[in-house]
Amino acid sequence: VGALPEPIEALLGAALAGELTVIDPAGRPVTHPMIPLYDGELIYLTSSVLFSKKLEHIKENPKVSLSISDPVAARVEPFNRATIQGDATVDDSDLHSGWERVLPLWRKKEPVIDAFLGKRVALPLFFERAVIEVRPRRAFLWEGGDTSRPPQVFELAKAVA
Amino acid sequence: VKDVLATLGERFSHAVIVYVGEDGYPVSVATEFEADAERGVVELRAVADELQPPLDDRISVVFSHIRPQPGVGYDERRYVSLWGKVTRGEDGYVLTPERELGWDEEDVPFFEYSERSLPQAKRYYERVSREQGREVKPQLSRGWLFLRATRLPFLSATIVPILLGTAVAGLDKGFNWWVFLLTLVGGCVVHLAINVFNDVYDFQSGADEANVTPTQFSGGSRVILYGLLSERTMAMLAWGFYALGLAIGIVLAATRGWDLLWLGVAGLLVGFFYTAPPLRLVHRGLGEVAVFAGFGPIMTLGAYFVQAREYAWAPFLISIPVGILIALVLYVNEVPDRPGDAAADKRTLPVRFSKRAIINGYIASVAAAFAVILVLPFLDVTPWPTLIALLAVPLALPVVRALRDAYDKPYVLMPAMGKNIQLHLVTGLLLIAGYVIAIVADAAFDDPPSFLS
Image: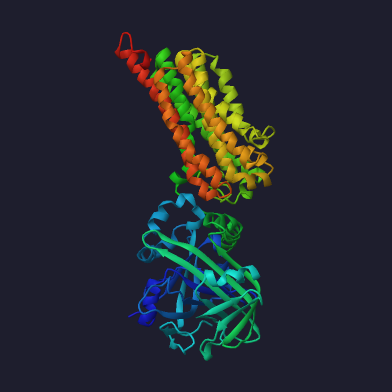
């Protein structure tokens, strides 16, 4: 049993893209479409140094949310929608290969990643990546995907200080 | 923003309302939407009361789309993020966007988007270096780095004329293995030196930085720009290659004839001043002439001379089509580079001339190259079997088509750039095969049939 309710785990397992929202220094939310990975405890997202502004924002403010909202990008039956709020940390201790620890999860969701990785020489900076680890704190689930109805709310962990 | 709103409904299936909740965590809730470009607003269906966005305040609304392609990955990646004031509407809320940002890979290909993001990567490396108290740089395995820094696959431009010059000598005068191998190594290291120097000077001139649409075949190695190697390391690498090439050239001149020296010096100077100041031949629209001379007559004649110990007209004349076709490789590869080249005052031929002139120039040059191949056997300069090189002509057709259809689309043009390199390689190899057939026929028959000699 993972940290998240099963329908949300199913969404995370299927979603090719979710919307990660971070908060910029002015306090505004900034959203980035990303591939979410999940190991039963933490949600992982990897970000290239090319698109690393979000990493800087997380380092300043770890509060994030991830929504799985697109039935095309997350094919599960029946379709649900979910938003997970959590506390994020950035692991950029080894930008070159540190992120490869989540490669098995990534490969499971997107098998073609190995082919892309084989062409690393073509776009080397794209594969210089940090890992964003999100510890879920609260989750909202809309069964059937209808967000006009009240969501099921799951309190999962205490907020960071 | 109005332009974005006009197509929002066609491009996205849903919206995500995003704001920061009272506890400081972002809240993101999907909903249905309708964009009204005339009024400049987006109408959003109401979400559950407990997640209602702060009315009369500013929020973000995000639209995201991706199409999974099983086994391939995905395509149609695009997103739009709108920022503006949200008010109560008839069935929900009304967003009046003030700002938008986003990306659509149909408008800006992913490779270009990545190149445009390079300054952010540099800022991040600086930050991580400060945080970790050591210099953090991007990496690539040594093998890949060498391949990328030297642009090793382009060595076909050197291998073809050296093989051809050797083959011509093989028919006329004979063949010496160690001389051939030394020539091949010497030619290759000088070529690598030219490639690496080209990168150093393109980095210094700003041409690399200004080019945001590099491809597999154009835009240089970019190893300095990416921070994979320093300018100093690249310069040292280039000088090392030049020194080795010079040493091999001196050995060959000393053992095969000092008349080789003039050709070698010409080759080194043309290669060095291809991008190096003060001549910067490629900046003056003379890059094609330099490449023609260096990888056509100079390489072919040099390879012939070291075998035959004399100069002759045949290797010079047959080097002309090979030189033209390799110059056309540069010519086509400069097409996607032209905005960046123009910004760096690198006035290549595609920067100077119109699309129509460039395409006509390509067709005329290909025709000239193959006309030379066709005519030379009739003048008794080359053996008849070299006519098999004419089989390569169809490879030029997709290049012409792509230049017509994708002149302004670097990544659509890329396969044609590969085909253009094949045109040079296949033509050169078929010419060499023609000579080999003639050599074999010469050895096999006392009086070989005329069509084989």
